[in-house]
Length: 339
Ligand code: SER
Image 1 (cartoon, rainbow, N blue to C red):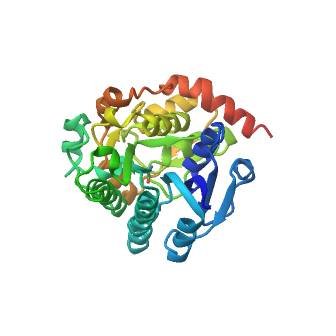
Image 2 (cartoon, protein in one colour):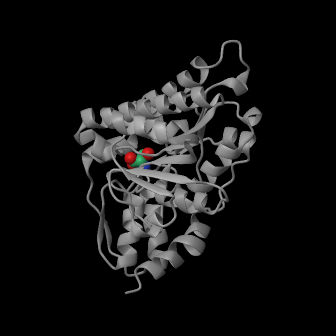
């Protein structure tokens, strides 16, 4: 007998931390956590099984298929955007090849269970791309189907995987079957930058915002690697997690598309710096621009239009920037760095 469970890949990453915490609180969920590295102590007690391994390892994928009956797969493992630019081939292998392996696992699972397996895929504002700052600045909050011209390998990987998710959902179904007989129910969110109080991202390009805040909380100086007028959307980690759980539990009939924008606030780097200074007046934050990373963020939208998510599954962030700082980030950071 295979064991019923949900699977989380990239479980030890930033989003994995938040998602494991949230899913653990639900009854009757057996969490199988997969990561290259051992899980942090803070989350390892919250999962039922912890597996160390690589999503590119076919024998591991087969082992998972043989041992478990997954009703949902949260495929979070990825190489983030800055790191991906340094090794585009590995980024492609992990971000695309790894996703393909997990989609094939979901397909096998859907076929053997005779029902559709839910598949969550975190996409990104990096799928968008502008020809230059003029186009970015004149485009405002953009909708899901416009400006999908990624200029980073990470953005290319994410956009292609969105399409793969669509393909697997629409192509693999019992002949003549209705929507509910598809083997895979792929749902994806294009996340903006995410700010967590508990973790700092590794290898992303929206990292200047969380890094600035964590440095201030630790009493360390920080050099922001993008210009002060740089603007992309952000949200807090609790809102990112509640978005995932809402989207994944939304009735199928309400879901009119596979990929949704969401966003909470969209400060410039300087506006965020000022906000940090309100809470940490002694913080030392300067600018030292990385041309490569600036170019990447300049190709991403200043804001996105999240009306589809609002309409279809009642997406609503709990935190704007002020509340997020006051009620979530600052109290947690004070706890975390009190010594
Ligand atoms: N936050 C991610 C990064 O910077 C983009 O999705 O890579």
